[in-house]
Length: 179
Ligand SMILES: Cc1cc2nc3c(=O)[nH]c(=O)nc-3n(C[C@H](O)[C@H](O)[C@H](O)COP(=O)(O)OP(=O)(O)OC[C@H]3O[C@@H](n4cnc5c(N)ncnc54)[C@H](O)[C@@H]3O)c2cc1C
Image 1 (cartoon, rainbow, N blue to C red):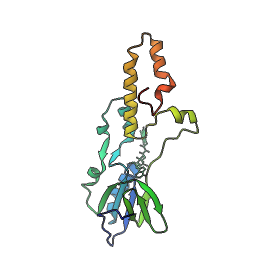
Image 2: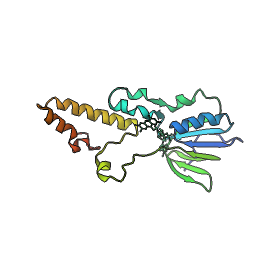
Image 3: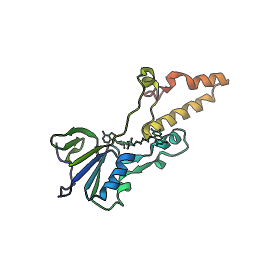
């Protein structure tokens, strides 16, 4: 595996932050004042403003209104800051090295701010059938599903029939766009 290219090693301490979410983004901006080299790594090249996912899922906002390119967030920052789009694979604590899908990188300090995943509280049926909403893509998926079914509802004659279409559990099966 090769070292991640074009991030020079100097006498400055290197802080590597995994995740450009609320926590990672804020920490990166603040840490620049400390004189460290800051490297932000995120599997996406954009920041997602999660509190507005509901508005995307209900077609109140365009996805582009709540996603911002991380390079744009950082490009006005003065200091030794770098961004790479990469997914963290492994942390080698003994050698202070992280491994990603684009190569490895040494660090002096490492912060992992990769957020959380959906908690189904051990309810297997919910995990299987519900649509999570932790990414913009999932919010768009939900929006598309709602549009499809709201449009289909017009073909049903009674209120009860159309309601049944909406609450039928299988219509919310996550991986089945064609249902
Ligand atoms: C629908 C919804 C509504 C919310 N509403 C509110 C609200 O009204 N008020 C409030 O205070 N909070 C709200 N929250 C919670 C808030 O958004 C989170 O607490 C906050 O985003 C957490 O920030 P974070 O930086 O820890 O993680 P995140 O913002 O999730 O960022 C994690 C980052 O890590 C990246 N990442 C993950 N895994 C890897 C990997 N292996 N390699 C590289 N990068 C990786 C991700 O791409 C992401 O950019 C809401 C959350 C959701 C989902």
